[in-house]
Length: 65
Image (cartoon, rainbow, N blue to C red):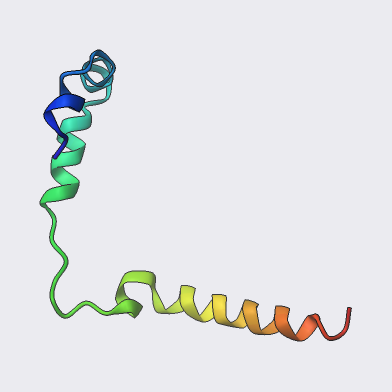
C-alpha cells in the first residue's frame, strides 16, 4: 500500500513498530466495495435525510433572521 520511500523512513518504522500501521493498512485496503452499492448505502439514508432536513430548515430560518 505505501511506497518504498515511505516505508523506509525512520518515522514510519517507529510508528509501525508501535501501532502496526502496515497491518491496519493491509486490512483496510483488502476490503472491496460490492458493485450493487449506491450512495444511500455508503452515506446512510438516515444521515442524508437528517442533513437535508437541517439544510431546509436552515434555509427557511434565513428569511426570519
